[in-house]
Image 1 (cartoon, rainbow, N blue to C red):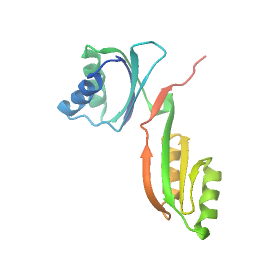
Image 2: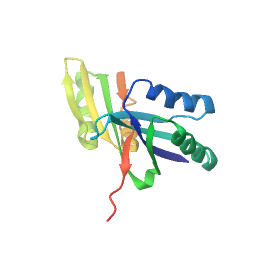
Image 3: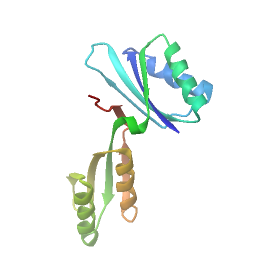
Image 4: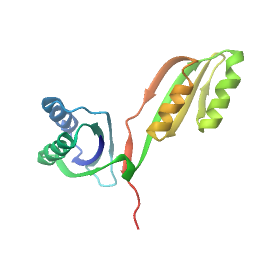
Length: 159
């Protein structure tokens, strides 16, 4: 089972290290981690995706809440959230493979953001599942480099 933790923290040096250390010491796994500033000066939001059984996921939340630099912890499941991931992928292509590559990009709504005579850099920003599907579609091409962000997420709007 996966759980998403939205952790508001003081934006100061060493906080990320303390949170990562908590996971390391307790043997918890981090599937994905993304950190960025919020609209509040001096406050950052860590989006941590972790997996485990119910007891482990509950323990993670309790341990996060004990940290001094943690302001607030919200947890939610994948089904309760809007999630997004960004991936850049650089591919070596030939004249004969370029058309297939462009067609896959169009079908998956990915963008070509850089191009040379033999290399193409593609950007996709979508759900983690669709980013994974896009990557699987590229398996027959010569991938040179991949960079992916962690999942960013927030709870769905509720009226």
